[in-house]
Image (cartoon, rainbow, N blue to C red):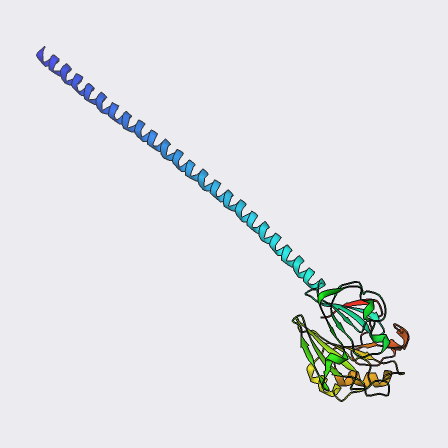
Length: 285
């Protein structure tokens, strides 16, 4: 009997111990499960945070790219506007021209023929005193600091003068050498703009000794008179163009009393010939 009681007590003890151990294991398993779920939630939260950051970075990148594209387009448009706003020459006809510089300064050379005298003048150049070069009254407005340079200022003590106005450098050069135009009272002008482009206006002249010196200047444009009545004719003018060796040779002062004559302009057999009709604008580049 005692032996049976002992065995029952032993079994009960073992059962209680086993139950206690089992409860601890269940508790550990439960805690492990909870920790695993917590870790899973944390990992998912991290993943969501990373995905959100990535999407935000992508959006910022796309916005930056669009901003850069807008900046590029704006720069391109500004470049195009810059091209359009180059030194612009209006050939008014006969010996008259108007130039608007990249700075917006307005220059008139030998005002007389054609239209386009409405822009306020900053600089007026006159090569000599004949009526078909001295129509300054046609210029309707002059800025308060407008400068006028005639053959008088350009020839000081028999020396050809230069004038640096910042937006353009003006150099007086020889003109004349024929019965109608005396070298002591006539000039031509070379204009060099702030971007380096140069333009030579011969004024009324025949061949001058100084023309041979101009070949080394690599001038961009030359307006060469060629009427054959009061100045040299087409053949001599073409030889002068060869001597001067500019990139563009333009016939002007083509026929006395007329703004322009296409037939004579086409007969101008100069190298690098460029025909500009009266009333036409070109960009000096």
